[in-house]
Image (cartoon, rainbow over all chains, first blue to last red):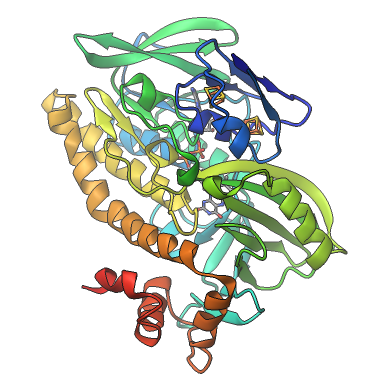
Length: 57
Length: 392
Ligand SMILES: Cc1cc2nc3c(=O)[nH]c(=O)nc-3n(C[C@H](O)[C@H](O)[C@H](O)COP(=O)(O)OP(=O)(O)OC[C@H]3O[C@@H](n4cnc5c(N)ncnc54)[C@H](O)[C@@H]3O)c2cc1C
Ligand code: SF4
Ligand code: SF4
């Protein structure tokens, strides 16, 4: 389970990191990393201001 | 870099830099780290601040003031304008900052006060001894380091991890965050007021802002409450707003970001740890403003660090003073704003218009928000009944 980050869309704002309930996301300067604790809950994808995240089930 | 500091501050935003500067001025050994290679860039902010609040912390300087504004205009869905927050003497009441420079100047002031600063340095975890937090793991240029400290300050913004590592759940629910997009727009008449457009008509559960950055440029942006966004993206709504209201505008910068708007969280200190600013979710639930709150909280945090150092006690027993002091000041205001926000969320565009009309023959131009809300309440007690507790 994971999320796909469209790096061509992402504005590296960190909003998704702030809402992830399990802390699976990390903003490293200009990109988002996803670790294996992601539960595919979809909260991050919902709040991304530009729609750069897609949940992979 | 030393092996050990009195205080390590994670994040060189306004909150972190004020904490670092205040601690360093008192002679504490301070390290301020920032994961980005450039402090202040990219911006995630509309850069609006009230003049009187800002000068508590720093002398205004042309280098980082993009524009001065007379006050604010709230625009109801039907176009009714309400002026407010003008200075009594007719002077300028607010600033639109140039945060790329402002944030750097604050970090520079911390450095000049004696703090060490490291950029491109990211905290990746916390060190612990007997349950107490005793420093951070950090990565600088791909290399990992252990940096010990008596107190760690988490000033790491909306994406804060420091609190979570320290056992404080700071994760935001969709209802606790405004998801925002903003353009720096040129080729427009920016005017002399910060403008706020309210109503579902523009954006669900947020507002559209236009903050002048010069005669012909402004930050034009909007926020949607996370729980209300469904499949709508802020960026799409903003593009629509531009088409309908500023077709002549030319976009010269894009900003995206999230602002915590859920009000005070339960806990912001642990043994050896203090959270400051957006990391402590101290931004205003109603306006999304967080620069001044972060700076105020940073000042309090530093004062408590100085006391802790004198006592040689870095446990919650001493650090709780921070918790009590910020809740009694910033926290109180956040709770009020939260009440007003929650009520506004229930009002239809028609009801917002009705509120605006109820002020039609009053001069609100010199009023601050609390006073105006009180008058609104007196004139619309039924609609605003939930707010009665604000005035007791
Ligand atoms: C679109 C938008 C518009 C806004 N408009 C306004 C406004 O007009 N007026 C206002 O007052 N407020 C506004 N805000 C809110 C304001 O930007 C924040 O409240 C303010 O920046 C908070 O300051 P801070 O110091 O707490 O955090 P930040 O300014 O976010 O600084 C945190 C810093 O920590 C760094 N960091 C994060 N994690 C790590 C790590 N692991 N290691 C090292 N460094 C790290 C980040 O890179 C960042 O530089 C707005 C916010 C947004 C998103
Ligand atoms: S919320 Fe969207 S734009 Fe912001 S960092 Fe996450 S993926 Fe990127
Ligand atoms: S889908 Fe849920 S668990 Fe996975 S990264 Fe997004 S918010 Fe976190």
